[in-house]
Amino acid sequence: MELLNDEIKTKIYEIRDTKVMLDSDLAKLYQVETKRINEAVKNNIDKFPSDFVFYLTKDEEENLKSKFSTSSWGGRRKSIKAFTEQGVYMLATILKSKIATEVTINIMRTFTKMREFALNYKDVVIELQNMKEELKSTKENGEQNSHHIKTAFELLSQILDDTTSTDKNLIGFRPDKKG
Image (cartoon, rainbow, N blue to C red):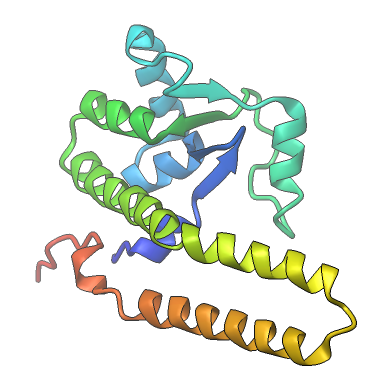
């Protein structure tokens, strides 16, 4: 089994303006049952303040489920827990398995890469927003608008080139293959 950066990225959601991972997704990654995650938190509640883990509201759960065409959650009895980056790390220290350690290292690297990406391209996003505002105010000037659009596409192409040239070997979890 190979666990790559892109696979983990799909399990990181933004809820309440915070990047989080859900208990069920972490359980799959750590190869344990979700109830094992919940027991670990319950037995070590002092290690999980509200900025490490929180329960999703019904509205947040519905909003999240609506983003998927089919739900595999099938009627959970307990509320969904969302773990922040710090909560994921704390969970790994409690689970204390080799898989939990290796997966957490990969998750931390993914969070770091996402943060670096956001910081690196913050200026590009600001520039695109400024261009959008200029386009709104200069609708009559077609030539200037064409120039702005061309510049925007050049910036987006640069971002795509940068992201595809990332060394994927640095990020990933590959258990030793035996046999």
